[in-house]
Length: 165
Image 1 (tube, rainbow, N blue to C red):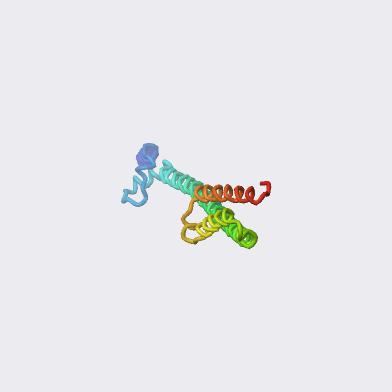
Image 2: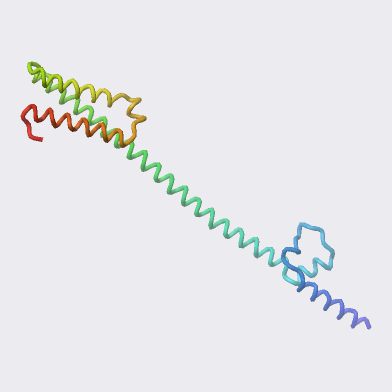
């Protein structure tokens, strides 16, 4: 009789273990001994652990993607800062060269009033472009437009002096 009772209890525990779900097997909640036994026998605890490990793996992959995106953004920022630094350096060199040219031409053409007027305009544009407040807030398009206007004036000045552009 005892053997039948043990067999019946065992089969009941096995069947109840199969009936549990991983969601019902939460180790942080109070559960009866029979519920714990059924979660252990039915694999509910193992399924929760596997689901947690899978979630950690997915989180690690997403974290790696976020780090990759952050690295790419930092590289683009660094490249932009370098490009801006190079552009500013080139702008500075262009302004210095323009100042040298204007100074040489002023010395050479003091008698010619028309050329002196053109030189004054070029010099004013160079000085306006070299103000640090404007250069910092100026966009690439604005700078390109200003440089194109300056290039046109230099070409006209070259033609006035008899040089071929």
